[in-house]
Length: 328
Image (cartoon, rainbow, N blue to C red; front, side):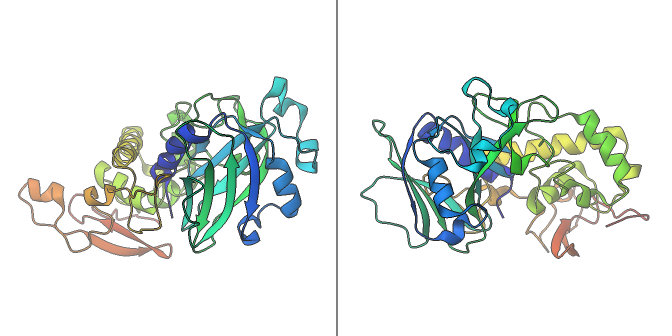
């Protein structure tokens, strides 16, 4: 499943290609990929035709394209509160859920359709740029749908964007801000973290507490911070929490610089290229291999893999010792 860095790589790629362009036609090749759009195919197409993509926004792992100037008069538009669309601000957004294998690819019209093409959007011409945005999804766990834009609960920007607005796609309104969000509040995060009374990694994976961190980057952030995943959140000192958030931010920025992490050829950016941060991982996927930090200190230790919430956790037993009162 793509995590924050992978989705941010896609966002950055899309911004330069689609921002400011108008959707001129919509081809839904496989309706299963718009199943989350409750009002069906006609409404989905109607909301997109003639709409202008005003930006590309991300919060955590959620990605959406705010739309303006839509010619549609369907219920999703009619139901948007007036405060959500002042002075031409976007009333709806095209939400993209990548799932396990979803890809958003920019392609020229003469490029043959991908085998697992699900939705094709044609965009208004722009010199030197591909004219089609294609959603490709082999496993069909992802999808596209149109959702209302609503005011943010804290009055801040909805997410990371080129022109931030105090609006958020309704389907993403329930998730917390992520560590790369300029409006992220450490004080609020720490206050909520201490109240969780659970294990540290379980808290990091809770998108209502902090968004964008999945299994891979949780393991990497905990390794960098030298904290065990079972550390009780209500015992975490402020300094430890600050170090953890800083490490989570650092590891995701490092992953962004490498184009994301790719263990699967299905994850690519908008140009079809895979990331290579998996070559720099220190904990995740390194079961039985030496811990780099311990090795540098002349200590022999190997990364250990343990079952965790139907997944796996990777830790060093020396520099990330399990707490006696650990929690899952």
